[in-house]
Amino acid sequence: MLELLNDILIDIGHPAHVHFFKNMIWSMQKKGLHNIKITARDKEITLKLLKYYNLNYDLVGIHKKDILHKVLEIFNRDYSLYKIAKDFQPDILIGASGNFYVSHVAWLLRKPSVVFDDTEHSIFELILNIPFVSNIVTPIWYKKKLGKKQIRYNGFKELAYLHTDYFKPDAKIFDELNINKDEKFIIARFVSWKASHDFGHTGIDDLSKIAILEELSKHGKVLISSESEVPTNLIKYSLNISPEKMHDLLYYATLYIGEGATMATEAAILGTPSIYISPLSNTMGNFDELSKYELICIAEDTNQMLKKAIELLQSKDIKNVWRERRDKLLRDKIDVNRFMIEFIEQFHSPSLR
Image (cartoon, rainbow, N blue to C red; front, top):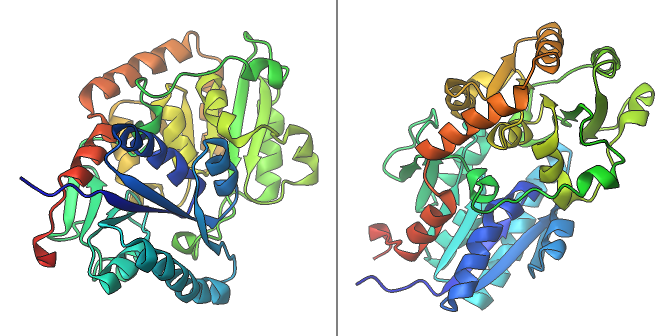
């Protein structure tokens, strides 16, 4: 019988990681068999989400935007995490989406580490991760072969928190944003293109954003979520809600369009028509898999995106069509949250004997 890994350190570097790990943490805490320590980086709304979900954490760094400070952050965050981990002495360290900090610290402490990843174009993170990590856990559709350390599962990381067994939409979001339940509304997401895995790529220019959203506003209410500054002409569409309510909004939205890969996937898995545009779309297997279920549309340019968006907005019963497709996907995929718990509880790394 394998020895239970009681003390677990989970490092969170992005708001999406809070959602990804929260159900796993709650489930494991409920068992009363595990002592879980959370460390977190101050990036965007990460700390707000942790506080909202009453997840106590130790701060290990602040997100930096320029290249020089990103490099310095590697050493600073490694050191901060190392000090906490050395004191805590976890049985295993866990991270997500190219988190090489946990693998570095685990290697120094001679402890196992597991990183859940689904972003194939994060070359920089993979280079810094693979020599040190015990296992990288990826979906089966992940395009890269990472060798003997790679473990695959049949699902999407977003199912860990958006599967119908875990996520129940709250219709109060309509009152908060003063939206009629019968009113069509579109969520548009723009990213900053400053992440390390986005280096060398750019997104939709401001003039195109204005042209697209002004046209779409003729077909429904437009709401913008953006990492970067919104053009002056579009400020009137800026979205202002509590971050934990974003998935409620995505669930009820008529349509999602944008550059945000995670949000595009979340919309599709929630049964909301989703249009994704990015020079990186062909590098990620999740979009190939979602396309098989006809849950996502990949736009090659802004003209194609606008044309498809109007087509979907004018289609009858489009939400029910997407929900049926979503239900088929759920039948075909595993319970990712349960998989994560079982994988960690049964974890055994021969290389650390």
